[in-house]
Image 1 (cartoon, rainbow, N blue to C red):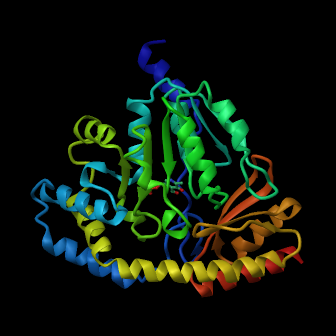
Image 2 (image 1 turned 45 degrees about the vertical axis):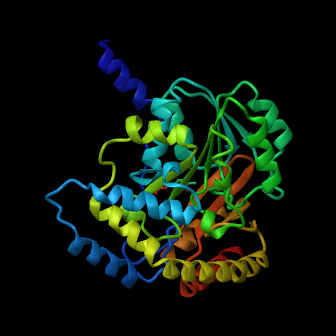
Image 3 (image 1 turned 120 degrees about the vertical axis):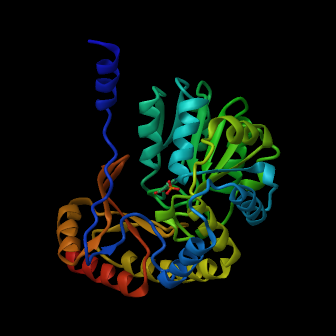
Length: 355
Ligand SMILES: Cc1ncc(COP(=O)(O)O)c(C=O)c1O
């Protein structure tokens, strides 16, 4: 076999990424987007972005503007900011450039894209199971297992379980993990209790990864960013990232979203209130174990009711993410917190299915 066919068939051995189905007229609670944020607001900033830009030109001045805005938002300096076409693209780039053929450790379950991309770049990944009792992690054994690993990936809050670990445990992990690249994925940080972005100047091996796809309601615009020590950022911005990783359209959308942050903040408050209400309701149902969430989605086990719940949710035109058995969890599912109307419909459907 020639080398091209060999490489192609090696790649084909991995499980391909499957985009979720788009179903018209369904409540879309499967991808943790912010569907509470007013669509008219996003439309207004999108139209402004169209009007203000000359798309015949490459984006130039947008970079500095966006870096400054993100730095201000994150309480850091412009030299701590890198951007990409979604955090997916940044993660892929980091793994394919500086992490190639190293070894990694993470928790199970977690954001599967990280594991898939590691597989692609021949990075073996050790998985440490979370406790099904309360989604907690045994940090002592995680640290022990990480001794001979090069990369640590932790989503905080974690997807799909929705929880953030105790801040002191995560800080301790960072402090004892010298000489390892630590990626803390804060995709859902706006819904949570804490960020670790203030540590990036202290630890030059720490990368905080963030996105505009979740709280900011801009998943379609594909805007992600990292916060890190300037030593990493310099190399990332000058050598690793593409010269034009984002369109001027998208960059201006992000700038406008940050300038009008009140809109996003209001939606976050609504989602957090709904999070309490919905948790209390689902927690009353038989045959479902729901976990507390620090994000904009819920994770729950449905045990033997998995197929029945799936069927009923589909009949009721509600799309959620159904994992089935994952880690030590049985019949696991994840549902985005949507508008009150959507959440009420989800609760009713779950009630119907678990009677
Ligand atoms: C933990 C986590 N990180 C990253 C991403 C991807 O974000 P982006 O849309 O910026 O690529 C997701 C999306 O589901 C996620 O859950």
